[in-house]
Image (spheres, helix red, strand yellow):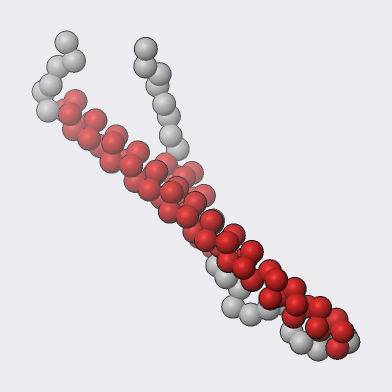
Length: 95
């Protein structure tokens, strides 16, 4: 037995757009050298930036992939819906 499925394509596209904006790699560090108040704090911040860059890269790549999946899903649903509507409009009969 089949089940009716409803998909909010606009919501998929909105989610993809939100992720696309959120997944961008920051152009510059929020905290610049000297902002932390001491050379030791600056060194710790620099060490953290080096440590976090690979993790941040993985997060950005995952967000980009999810963005592409959401866009692709929205496109597939719209395409499938159009194909189904065209098939029903071409004079075909279900029985």
